[in-house]
Amino acid sequence: MLNLKEYGSSSDEEGITKDETPLETPFNNEISVHELSAKFAVNAAPNVLPPAHDTSVQYLDVGTKEISRNMKYEELFTPVAGPENPFLTQQQKAPKNMMTGFVEKAHISDFMFETQRRTFHSFGLLKID
View 1 (cartoon, rainbow, N blue to C red):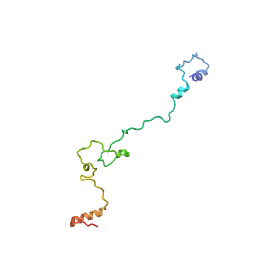
View 2: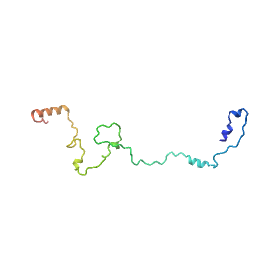
View 3: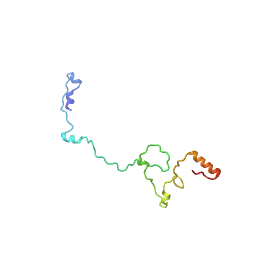
View 4: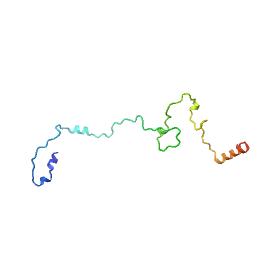
């Protein structure tokens, strides 16, 4: 503050002097350098709480066929949420993609399948190689 007072202004250059009154300091308490350095110290590695439970997880419906955004591994493979039917057997609880069970994609060409289907419908038998 004293440096600002001594700096002056353009009116000082003209030779006009004002009554100089002593500048009152707004702080009566003197703070030591040690207290200031402790108050404004930079903490490069602050204490951070570990992520407890990620509440931003968005659950996905089991019947969804197309996902419109990139999801994390944890979001894709979360257990199915919701109440469980206590009256279902283990076989009924098993994952299914058809009413009768789980059908896997067969490794057969379309040509061979159509040939076998037409043979069965025409002659009533299958040619097994």
